[in-house]
Image (cartoon, rainbow over all chains, first blue to last red; front, top):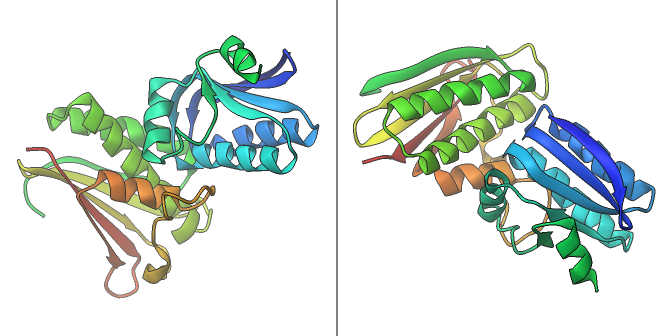
Length: 110
Length: 138
């Protein structure tokens, strides 16, 4: 897995690429929580995620919970089919705010 | 154990190896005639089982080994996992309530959701732990 973080429209967009599994999820977790620790709103772009397991999903849950505590915005954008099927299995597809694109998320923010 | 063996692989309890293990599982399930959706589910479940062995049986030590076998008996695929770690507390293995939103317990939840049968136990003589899973394909 690789990742990149960019600033866009008031969000730190964490773009994950590849397999987010037990070997890679600590890095994903660190990237997400690192942005939240800087009091940045975070969107995680999953469009290039080819595989995600429970450890990867746990990183997203931790990000979601941390953002909530810190009253920061958090969401997912561009969720790949591979990632969406796992989020559905975890019953989290209705918990995370999910949007197809950053623009859609910004429109939803109002 | 019955049926045709589709895969036998022994590998270190190292998270970096899991990607290769997933590839082996995928190939075996495709040879077993599974559709893409089922293959993806099985890959996830077996990956979760291996991850749990690495994290909980070997407690993150990469020195341990895991053996995975896959059999096809025509009606179902059987997955046999075995480690050589200290016996785990079998009562501590359980999925979280899917209504709870918390990071832990998802791996076991996925296994229970995907597989039709699942049995954990200790290998005789304190020689490790096993996990047997079955997925109907017929």
